[in-house]
Length: 295
Image (cartoon, rainbow, N blue to C red; front, side):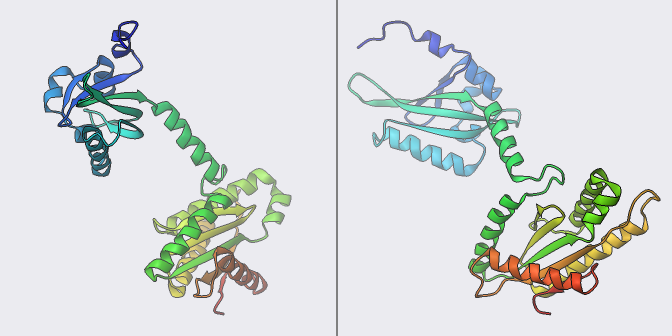
């Protein structure tokens, strides 16, 4: 059946970037919207390949494989969400729908791809994902995301036969600070503490606010001696910051419980349970110190 009206309105649609590819995967025609999306002009088309507009080699291999399936009549179409590369080096996110282009005898001549820019939707998605994983005051991971990342870190450590340790940290007498000076000042203490800890931690370490004045750090590839060194550096750094505090700032301290992964640990809960017991012993010993599950 022939179309009831001209398809020019689709080709010229301001929301759809359309490209036609021959059976070699070469670009043979593009719409003005497509050029606008990728920041190319018509003179660039002859030298472009699929790899030029995708963000990495893995995506290029996958896209070429899917195109080959279309050209070999193994599939009629496919749909993907991709991060595309622009001529100027920038990127945008798009939904792409690719279908076979055939003649009346159903011979595959090439493919037609339609791209819709979804960068705004992706930006909102990333923002919501970030907000759902981060503590709003301290701007570090929240409890839920900490458990997700740390459980995976434990699996990775077991797979690689690597050590892993956990620090469980509590700000000493924080309730008294809040009661005497108010919650806004307590919030300042929390933010200051987070800044101090970030100064010490390594890039792969997982740092989170577990609740109230309680924090946790998962230390990948960290044995018990390495974990105690990091804990002591945190204590020392807080002491240094306290020594430089302004007259209107209240010094504070923290206690740290340390646990190192064992063969018989069934999950993160076992590690946290031992770190929490170590933290309790640090509090009982006078606060402003660490204790380990080996003590």
